[in-house]
Length: 169
View 1 (cartoon, rainbow, N blue to C red):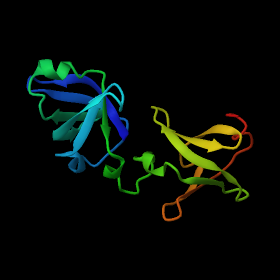
View 2: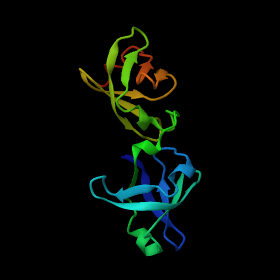
View 3: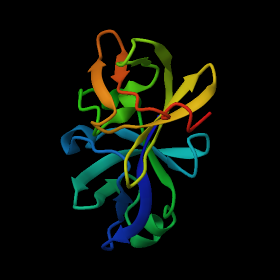
């Protein structure tokens, strides 16, 4: 499961929710899709998305079984999780979670660096968490570092600048 965002507030009186955006997703894909809502994946409840709209900073979402402002307020600060298979396009920068388990290779000398274990989403730039023999390495997921993504071979080629791999170990 992938965290789509966090419920920040209610919208109107019919149970609509304002959701902060963690990832970009095609709005049409999520309507009538099953999601789970909770403080963690393990402790979450299933809902069906009835309405899903994007605005400038997040999403407006309406879930089945949530029909009043009071019911919606009970979900504030909880996360909305979606199945990974919903994100199937190749827009890696909008949906970096599809890169999990890809091999990471240095474009400088073709050396193996590690495997993408996780992605950290933040407001400045996303970070790839790469599991290597030396420990976890955080690589900014921006054009300056990402040289190529080969989805068929599940390989990411990155440009290594001096000291980058030493920062995290």
